[in-house]
Image (spheres, rainbow, N blue to C red):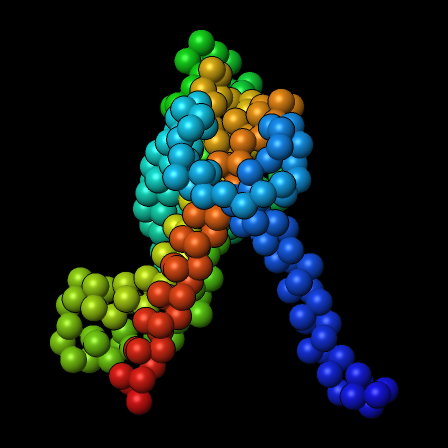
Length: 266
């Protein structure tokens, strides 16, 4: 028995870590089918499909969800474009202040969110935009902290590329534009997509920075925090389960596409 445990110790520890990680997620999925006896009691009292059939039973929750999705999409789009351009500039070009720029990129990632949120709030107030706090200030804040993650992700992808493929394209008389779109960009695209998914997750999930710069707007995390004091509706778990399924679909699709490409090369 001891020898059997010794041989499988790493596997058992890995399974234990996975179980510890996924138990809270499993609870969210389970609670999405829960019919609670009371709103302020968070226990599984009975199975029902009512939560899935009436996701927007609480209109305020769906409004908050829609706001988070709009902000997440726009912040991801802008941060991905700007971050990709900045990543290419930092890796492929040498300019004055490049080392300082590399250092400054890490500051929003290293600084606590409460510091970033309060600093942005101070900036908006000093600029006379205290009465305009809302959608646009949240969007600006999310672009700001998502940008660093995009730059770091894209830069890491670029730094790991082998430039011999680009040199081969040049030897075959490809123009710089053709080399970029047919060689460089397809190789960097997985990193760009990964950065975009990370940005959307960070934007959709953020609470501290958003809470400080939201004004009268309410995003989905803020709604959940406010509803917790009187009882979180079970539809919140439905939204969480849908986001989980969407993430799994993206990951599985990406893995299948990568396997097909590897098989095609073989």
